[in-house]
Image 1: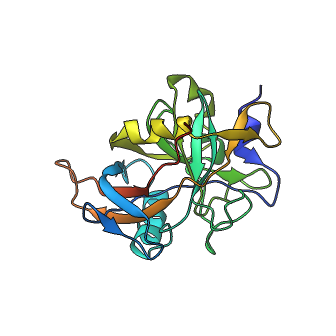
Image 2 (image 1 turned 90 degrees about the horizontal axis):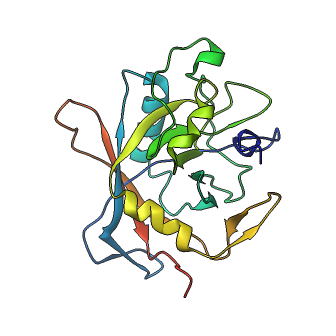
Length: 212
């Protein structure tokens, strides 16, 4: 299976990501519980991808990702989210420069397990906006040079792994990828920088609909 085609998708399609946090036991407007235990933290690396990190921080700070979903989850590959349409065809209003070598930008963050990278459409290297993906495997390095890696899940990767336990169906791909129940980001917010001054984002998930 050509996984690269799964991230560079038709002209109307894109990919993206982010994070946030609320107090444990908080409820959203839908009355669905979201807890700090059901969260993960993404550390951003602005020295590697400054444009991408600034865009992600702006989206997180504006509340853009709150209530959005991970609409594509593929075993051994990645989890993709951040589309306001929830289909892979949407994004934010602003598109940004693709910070990767095929687009003339040095980026030495390799697509290994836990790394966060921007999705984009196949018609332009500068088409990323809000959709992002989180790598599940160290074998995702074939994406290096073609996608803008900009961060890494440094806490709570087990929460991202739990997405794989949600029932999924085949949707235009040879492997199950489309969740039958939504995997929802309740809140994404900026939290304190790490010890090296790198910005961090916390994403708190609503209850993950793990199949019985």
